[in-house]
Image (cartoon, rainbow, N blue to C red; front, side):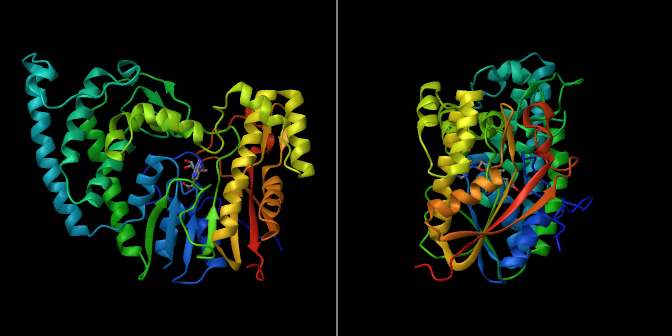
Length: 433
Ligand SMILES: C[S@@+](CC[C@H](N)C(=O)[O-])C[C@H]1O[C@@H](n2cnc3c(N)ncnc32)[C@H](O)[C@@H]1O
């Protein structure tokens, strides 16, 4: 009997799941199904492309030890915060202090504005970060308020509490709708569209509103966490996992889609403001964008070279050839995607314990009018790149809930099939060394 993995109409925002918009998150019920089906309490679950941390939150709620990896610094921050319960009283005390201090700062700002004192004179020690098109994407007064608030957040200790507030801060910028304090809408869908808000956004008010919501969510997580359980971010590249061979009981993950979601393009709006706190800069983050799996920032020359390479897998080579006839650039992008995914799958095969499962949630694509059956191709690639250590067991189909899943749903670009995604179950050969 087919398993129903649609979870249509079910509530997805329990625990900390709903605290920050993120493109292409999977529903928590899907991660729950995978974790309950393929692991036991106390075991280790790895998500090597952890995104906003859905797998880690579910691991904690179900009494597993979650490990997360992601190349994106904002994803790592969000995933860590969402899966780290904070004592309710400590969070409440930090919130009280912050609101008193920020309230005083913003009262000073109002006064300075009333008296016509420029921000740079009233707050000499608070620089407003420089980045390309700053005054286009953020109203100057909004930039002043973001800089003022950010300075307050930097003073919060300890780090897990500070990080919690950074995520609240980021969630005022990256939103699903037009409620961002930036001049954008639908940033969570990853393509920034310029939109001037009808009224000038009030940064402190937006922050406080989201803080209240996120505090409730955090208390929900803290109450719901099973004991023992844990969650840790352990690295930044699925192609190179800093884990011992055969050390993980389950892998549950959803890789990026070919050429579909440009995370840095959306996340840079928060990174402009939080980059230094996350150990990066606007320039470094832009450069990092070329290393994401699924990026379309592949130089045209490289694309041509990539399309000439062969994977030695008939279905995959035929897909790349068809793409190369239709659109050589995108064929190169797809070829690079599958090469990167081959590396990631090979690492998954290495760290998984024999006899255990790796579950990959993935959407097929339609690129330049060519159907790319990513789910089938990844299953074949996994077997080929691990010399049969990972074997395909079964694939389940599920229908995306349009109202929930934050995907850039555009029929023209991705074709009609994109509302369906696949859950590919692989298993490490029990006899493999
Ligand atoms: C579809 S999203 C995962 C969403 C996640 N399942 C959730 O519920 O939030 C794919 C993630 O892969 C990450 N990614 C891209 N290239 C990567 C790499 N080389 N190593 C690790 N993560 C990578 C992206 O930053 C993105 O967060």
